[in-house]
Image (cartoon, rainbow, N blue to C red; front, side):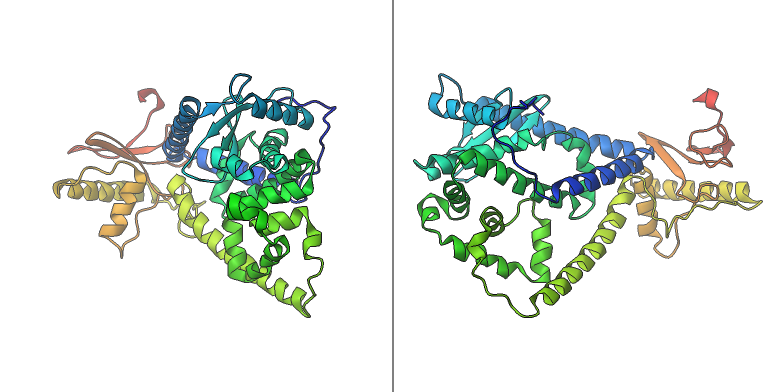
Length: 408
């Protein structure tokens, strides 16, 4: 985050749920990063995931810097001066890089961070839609500057792991949007102009000024079903009808209360929470095995292996080797990792569970290099890559042997 001035003229309170949701996301991310990185099999997946996202981010930033128009004293000086003024009023000591870009008629703006540089991108069609209404325009600019002022761009990579928990990351994103709407409204200095800015996002430049905001706010009632709640929880941004209501709750003050509405709403929320729990458990159960985390029900560790555990390991390793060689004889390449190995086993032998290491209670470990491969057990100490691992290499005549650290 850019350093901010304690004498900022604009100070707003965060949306009430933002900080609790940030804490939940941080805890979930910390736990998931620990789970992902504690298993050797997860590291290539995580590294690949981060590399792909990082390259996509670099490509996007390159496109903006090379093709969008950067505001400055010699490039749209009046708009640049207004952005500088709003940044100073919000308490930012440095004005972020601001770009003007067209995107096929989209009405949007966004803030982002690349390394230590903050950027704001304003889409030209949205500024055109605001027309001569400076307050509506300032609402949009102030909203994006609010993301920087509130520190929303810090630690986004670290919090990204929480996206594997359904609905959690999107809930934080929605709360942050409400917070930044408050910044935008304060920057506009005119609530009517700020509401117009949101109405333009909803209906466009031609029809936005004509929108009946009271009727639009009451459309929130159409989102009262359990399915609509789940759909809303999936979104990174709150519905515009709710965003307008959050800034101007008096627009719905005339709405007559419906008897029993609270009880019905509670039932809908309870049902929606149930859906979230079911979907969340299913998603976590599906995702985590892809990162080296074994499902407890299927892979419960055995704390006390039997006396014949080593003999079992030798037999299991031989079975896995026979299976891999059979795959090779059928013209298939050797499995490229342990997940590929056990996925093939499950496909070829659906009625026969894949062998489990009696010392760890998990799958046997596996690695391949070209056409060569190695399978091993964690050994009596239950830890991977230690001297007592029981290893079986490929090749005819190979037999299970004990690993020695000095040979690696």
